[in-house]
Image (cartoon, rainbow, N blue to C red):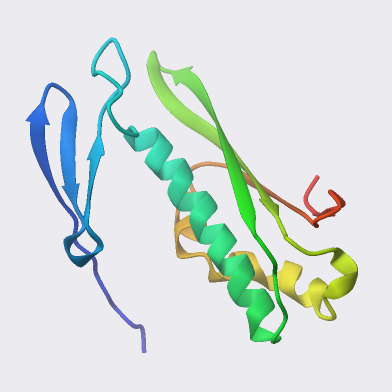
Length: 149
């Protein structure tokens, strides 16, 4: 039996292209388009999409490591999006996410299993990558590439 859930976020136009985004109990956020449309007073939807993918992957990596009672250390992430014009319209055509563990690879006893499965826990990336190619790289604290190309 499939589990169905939903979420809801409310947006209200402030002025120009600036919106107040109401996440309910999680608070509010201002979004805005960069110039020349808006004034860049907050992240735009493209930045939020990239942020959602990177944040979800980082949280999924931490979850997978913590399942084995191990410490991921100070995890950080960076996402880079590529824009291209398709049929004269700007589109996000790829995302690259780099995840950095706060500990050396040698400190993880189940690293192979973690790296094999953590992306499957990420709701956002699994949903987005059907339409936007998404490359994921994982590095340890020494900068060693553990996953990705």
